[in-house]
Length: 186
Length: 224
Figure 1 (cartoon, rainbow over the protein chains, first blue to last red):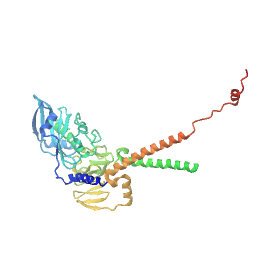
Figure 2: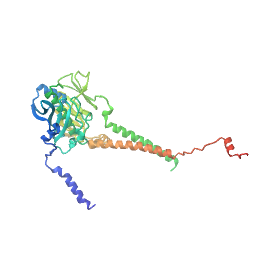
Figure 3: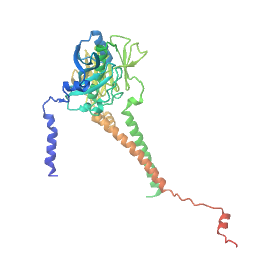
């Protein structure tokens, strides 16, 4: 027991170290160029296009999503092969428990999710949403699907708020693409 | 120990096991009220700006009626609306407390903002608007304008909190749930084991009684 005590104390000390660490905590999993490559692949020409929704469009989307849209303007990444659009992409921030999670959502022109990837995670807990086990639930989801925890999305244990944030973000991406890029109504 | 004591002990054990089993099953189901109830409203709030617009809440979610209660459809929020613990309406609009996702407010009942995280070890029991600001009543305190007034906790409340696990917050409810499931499994397997042991102890040999005539015939000396 006596020989184990210093080891136990060291483990305890190391375990509490993060509590004294700086307040800012940021895990960068993908830079913007890497995220764009993940969603669009290497063979599409990707442009940026910024759109400002009208008051009517904003109200329609906010009512559909049941919450406020955080940004005034929305910047889309548009992936083209020749003149044909093959994929839209949105880099979004969604508040997890307290801090924003940055992720990219790829949306096909038929309003299906192509893929989702977490780029930056800023909280000490809940980073389970970066795993493929969670993110693999989104590809193929369509605009109009509930994308709600315990309905069509299974949360990651210990990352419930982050799971809610990513699900809400994917739903937002589909709504934004439908209304602002394809001129649909919700 | 006499046979009578052994039998009495065994049956008392079975009775106790059944009581524990029922307690475990009902305790476990109590943690999932929403499974047991359909669209049962427990609270209703009228839009202060439109008398035909109502929101109603129950364990299975939050519903909206735009025709003064004739038809209802689910309210869309960015989080699951199960386990609504309080709903209110006032001059500032609507406010709803969700067990796992905190308190949300809305001026029109359609677009919601999260205003408070779910408290760690308490459930919000009631909400009210006071001059546009929210007043919260949790199981432990009344919170007015950010100021917390502790409420006296009755012994009954304490017993209830330990029974349901809420004394330790959400972690406690998960522990109670795990304990309840373990108790159900242990009780059921214990009953099965007791039944099998009892069955094994019973004599399996049953003497075959033959008619006297046959026996006589069988053992009678054969005449050649």
